Length: 455
Image (tube, rainbow, N blue to C red; front, side, top):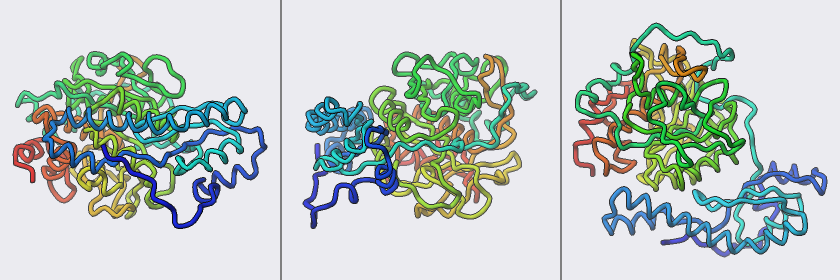
């Protein structure tokens, strides 16, 4: 395993000015001495994913072996790196400057609750690279259109969503594909295994569900966002209602966006759980980081998604509903140069039933410099999706969150068809098989491209 070391600095840095996020530094300067706050502490030592990938490539490691090796490398480095800091952290706890801490492996990171003095002492440690405050978005981060406020939602009369025929799901089913053997995960508002569409394929247990904020059994918030998105990906097409692309796949979920609000600490916990415990093959991210449309590129989550991708977990991103203005995209959907493969994020925009763009689907050019945004487009209007009010409740849905669900289900079918395909290979097949100027998701096209040899 290769580790990224700490290069000697050209000058002696000031810990507060060089390691603390500017907003955090300003807040600490005005904070009472005994007040604690939660911070993310990223350490200098990080796994060199590129060097590790080269070694695994020389060994000819298969997909599951690559996943196991990457996960083991991340866990081992984090354990060794954080152990070196533990005496300091334990002493600070005894002194009362640090209240508690927990470590993560998806990136070598600690979440620490500490006083200003404790945070300053952490910044002075040579093992620490950067410290940022816990951030919780006030606005809803979920990438969907006008979430219902009232839980009273009548079931649509349709028995089959038009979206499935539009992306060619029925043709894939005729070939015997259902997503069997594939696990689809979601970091979202939660998800309800009580719904008839999600009852039979929830993996369950400690590897099936995590609520990093409040604990408890699987559930969804009043918006029902995670339940609806997952139903488009892996709904089991029961009770005479057909709406899931990969009904044979299993699903897992982490409630990282309670009530739809993004929190960087909760996301870290979810990403770490997905890497170490859940280990899905496909991961739906139907949400956006806080900010205004076109506000730029927030790369704070790139290292985490790089690690997940290296561990053969394919992230699928909703493009967002901030259009139709040009450059109306936000991170993480607009990421470019992701590892491995220098890839664009698999961003999914929206289409209407007549094939025209969903009006509010976010548009390119990418704020992160990618050549194409979004990479794909899928149905995003006048859809049928599960709603967690009761086991048999449905709603009429719209938004690119659901488009991302369809794309995730399509990725599951491709992985069933070719279990050894890597993350970049599945992405390439989906992108190359897309149809028309709007790059409409086409399962037959993607399956055809997946059978071609990859260069």
